[in-house]
Every structure is written in C-alpha cells, then in structure tokens.
Amino acid sequence: MDREEQHDESVSVSSGAGTFQRPVLAVVVAVWVILFLAIAALSQLPRGQAAVPGEAGNDIAVGKAFSLQQARPSSIRVFGGVPLRVEDDGLAVLDAAGHEQSFIQYAYREPHVFDAGEALLIAPASGTEAMFVLPDHSTREIGVKEIIQGGDYRDGYVLTLGQSAKSVGVVTLYKLSREEPLIKLPIAEQGRPVRVAFAPGGEQFDVLLVDFSGGTPATRILRYDFSGDLIFDRSYTDTDLMPAFLHLGEGETAFYSDHHVAVVSDDTGEVRASLTFEQIVQVERQAGRLAILGVEDGQTALYYLPGPSSMSDKMFVRADAPVPLKSFALSSDGMYALGASGDEWMLFDTITGNLLARRRGLDGTERVLTVGMREFLVLTSEDQASIVTIR
Figure 1 (tube, one colour):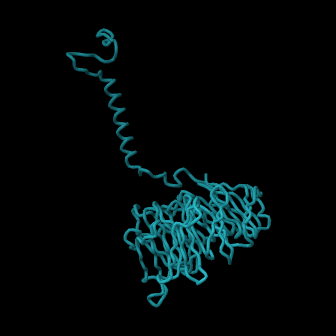
Figure 2: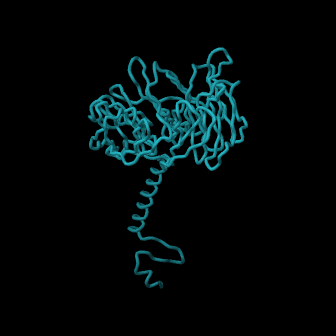
Figure 3: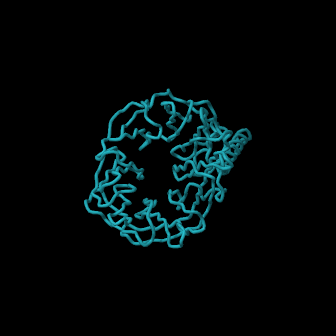
C-alpha cells in the first residue's frame, strides 16, 4: 500500500509516527475496555473446576417405570455403569428397561459377591476358590488356598483377603497374567485383618486391622508396597473401632463404623474431619468426594466432605433437605446427589449442600444407584424401577 492509498483510509501517517482519527480512536479504546473487563471477569472464575451445579437451572427427568421382575431391590447392583441382578447361580446383565441381556454364570453355588474395586469378586462361602468379573464382563478364576473374605482389583492386579486353615488372616497379591502369587503375607500378631484395598496412585496396598493389643478393639492400618515391605503402621485409639475404609482424593482415607467417620491424611495420619451419628445408614464415594447419610436427633441427615483444597476443608457440609432421606446416590463426578424420601426425589449440590430441584417420584422408593455421569437407577419396594436423569 503506498502513501496515497494510506491517506484514503481513516488512518494518516506523518513523519513516521501513526495517529488515529478521533472516531476510530474512540472505537478502539471502547474495544480494549470491553476486552479488559472480560479478562478481569474470567480471571475470577475457579480454574480447573466445572461450573457449580444449579447455575444452569437443573431439573430431574424421570424415565418410564419398568418392572424388576419380582427381584428384591437389594439384589440389584450397578457394575461399570450397567445394572446387574444378583441371583443364586449368576449375574443377570440388564438394560435400561430392566430386560435381561446376558447372564454371567457363577463357578460355584450361592457364593458371596464382593465389590472389589474395578471388578466383582465371587467366592464360595466355604472353600478355597475365587472368580473375578472384570470390567468387560469377562471372568477369570485364580487358584487360592484360603477361604476368601474380600479383595480388590486394579489394572490386572488382584488383592485377596483370606483365612487359612489355621484361622490366620492372609493377604495375597496376584497378577492375573501369572499363576503364582507375587507376595503372600500372613497377618496374625498385628491384629485381625478385615479389609484390603489398593492405595491410589502407585504400587501400594492397605490392610485394615482390628487391633486387640491395647485391651479394647482399635483401628489399625498397614500400608505395603508390591514387594511386601511395610511403608507405615498406624493405630487410632482415640475413637471407636472403624472397621471399614474408603480412599479419597488428594491423599486421604475415610475410616468409618456404624456410628463414626474420620478422614485422615495418608502422609501424616492426622484426622482432618470427623462426624458421629446415632447410626450411619449409607456411605458413598464418587470422584474422591465422600457423602454420608446418618441418623441424628432421630432423623436422617446427609453430609458431604469437600476436598482439602476447599475453603471449608475442616467442615462437613450438610444437605439442605426439607424432609428426612431414605437413600441417596452421588453422580459419578461427585458434583450432585440425588436423594429419595418415600415418593419424593431431591437433587443437591455437594459443594454447598443447596437443594437444586425437587419433584414427585415413584411410590415406595427404596434405593438410588449411580449409573452414569448424570443418570441414576431408582428402585422401589413395589417391584418398580426407573432411570432418572439430571438435565
């Protein structure tokens, strides 16, 4: 562009320095002001977090009700986002309308079915056998020499808790691609093992014990690496026995009993938060978020625990439930909770505890199960079920 062409535009050039005409200058200044304000507003939004639930106006959408085919609500579970009906001789795989799509046959008659992390563990009530249902619904059997009482599965590794013929607790680590176990740990002197689970983020696992060495039962946790070397050994004697635990995000573990829950740091063993109830009805974990439904003052109350990086990291948040809840489930991202009370369903924000939506549901709701990111399976005592979606 030569100087004559430049002169025809709204910009003039003099002595090598550019000067804008006033109308153009005003427009440019206005654009920069708007851009600056937009950047300032965006900088105030939390980074790396989804929008707070409820900002877009959430609602509860209910699918068409279908029959459970006379199955008890307690016999239905969700595995890998798919509903299963637990039967005496196997697992019936169901679709979203309750129709049986396939059947996973047990290798044993009327065994115990354990949740085992990414898999289901099937083991006879007495007898030294074990079978795993993997995430793709394929099955694998492993050779064990103990009566299996629980276990865990992650990325091709299997952890089992068993009892030997001499009534000694034995924790065994397997790799499914190998026949022989990687390590076997008899645990007798430390206490009675009651739970095992892989620790998050590495080749480590935890063994939860009931420790009687102090005269009264106490909670004790042992962490090992995949070589069988002990990483830490901690006891909690200041609270009642807590014989169950769940790993949370950001290096924390929640221990709980029928009445008490305590969240501790894996690094230091210090208790970050705790609650005591007349009775704990239900404990759920999704995406590292913990939720507890418990009885206090004769009525149920629902609580959530924010992560340690949140501003209220020392406090549980109570859900703003207008009526006592009977059951609930967390969405798979942990951001929502769907609660049920008889024939009424309520949607909550797990960050603030606020009630986001409320509507009439199926009569006699017994259980709420997480199916997907925004989908739940609701079961009733009247042989009915429905898929509920948050939208």
